[in-house]
Length: 456
Ligand code: ATP
Ligand code: MG
Image (cartoon, rainbow, N blue to C red):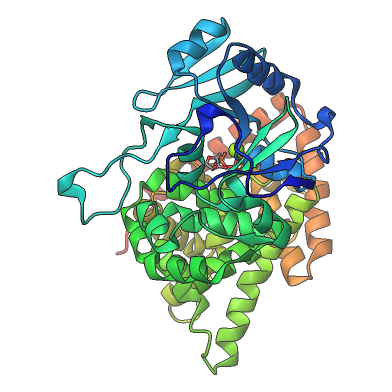
């Protein structure tokens, strides 16, 4: 990226900022090869421009292109209103009830095209409440840049002229590797505390340092996360777990106090950092190692399921709960199942985790003691290995083994048995299942004859 004309140039009259608003720093984007920009996004920007509407590529795609990374998606922001976009593109669908934006559809590829937005004016009864509840007023390019979250996400790229427009100091922060809110961090984090999670996501993903003032605001406002929409919070937590940098992200969540607010049981499990007890240190260390194993999976191209990510988060807590519930040194494998039920039901409810995934995570955790016995070649084991979510349980076993660095032979043994069980014809599995059911029923009748197993 070579800078052409720092801090003076203004892009076009439509983007001319109001007095007091920043001017754009315009930089040459010739460092970005045209081939890296998605043709569909280019088409959208071209047609909008040809028809007199200011239009740019915005947000994550500009950031990633400048960093030499592959953007996940290409978003467009424009001065055109949704109905003008609709009039220009037959393949545009207007979506969203409150804030309407257009999806321009090319086969299975969508270019999200949004009209420039501005920060909504605050109503009087909300004056003391910084939380943004609506975000639906149209604005200018500069207003649109200023309402974005971080400077590195606030850059605009005009692919036709090959220029980057920077109203927010994003170019300098990209170069310095700094993550910083646009505007006063105390205000911007309070407006939308989910930005705490987003800051952690971008900082860990890109290896950026979080600017000091932004970090202080994250610490100050972490308690406000309880006021954010749970669905957004859960989505961001799951993103962190799937990022390949979950270890760093969870450490940061803990350091800024967000973990204690969002997942208090995990924070409690990890203990106080200044705890002199070596056992507390080991416990935390084991927890981090499991997250590290999850990250290795991502780097090896094995995208973990949500259930696997959740089981990694909760495994140690469930094991501890089972340990506590155990009486007189008994080691009933059912302990872990019951503990998983208690812990995961409680946390699924309080953190609003997805129920379907927590149910699978519970089974995965409960299956683990069975693996310790080693794979056996009998019908019971074969049926166990044909259970629907068993591959997920094996994935958790693999992560445990790689985290603790022992038990590879056990894992390999189970994997070989799993392959065998999978190769078994379905009718043979059905026959084994029926046989097991008949035997169980027979045992039930026998028990009834001898008094039903009731204590006498
Ligand atoms: P990713 O590569 O993860 O998709 P992204 O930067 O594209 O990263 P998105 O969540 O897709 O992130 O959001 C697109 C853009 O919208 C961001 O780059 C940012 O400019 C803006 N944005 C998203 N969420 C917020 C928010 N909570 N507050 C302000 N601006 C936001
Ligand atoms: Mg995106």
